[in-house]
Image (cartoon, rainbow, N blue to C red; front, side):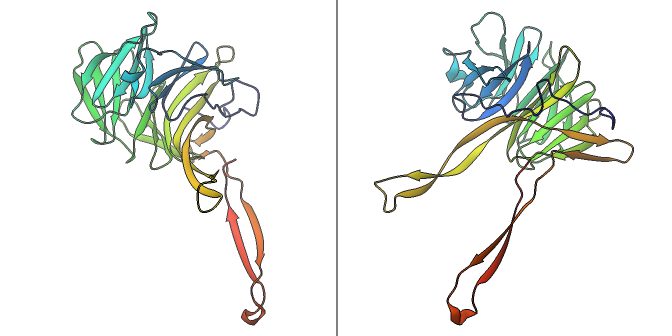
Length: 288
């Protein structure tokens, strides 16, 4: 549990930069392995290896990418890399370099996120609204918990806690791993959180929570063939950003990244007969 005197800190120099993987469209799974970040691009089917400090990106599965299209969630247990593909929970070898998926179990509803701890596999599903818990060796269903949110949820493990990211509620939840009870929740500073993972600094043991985001953003496109020179279009936007939070267990509240409020004052000229200039006040709240 994070105490008031032990904040999460960065494994890199402050402030931490946003990680923007090259050639990625929609990151829907992240996990740290040997100080590098593995990420799953669901749109392109790319399994990416990323240097968090430089954004240097390498595609690991140039031959098996079609089998990863639409996949989500990433977890590592031993020599296995786990992920979900539609209703199926899959894994592949980390060491053979083939990245050939094998089926672990098939659900009755689409699976979204996966986390693995020892002999236990945790799988989230928006359709069923539950976290299904399986035995890793036999594939047998052990129990189920209701998910706290309503959107697609990524999942990660940290000690005796389950961590979920909900893309519709723009929220990260911390749950008790044994009971599924919500300990606290915090808002994310950006919309559509799609995955999350903890990085542990090997030198200090300090941890940083990273959250991936996958959505679209509007932009103005120059189009000489349109009626006007510019038109509004949308493009994919995906990135990975550290989420700082503080949980006060005694007072039962949690805080996440702060917001910087910017106020603007605008005077819009109008014809004199209407009474002169019209004053307009606007507020803008980008995440800090």
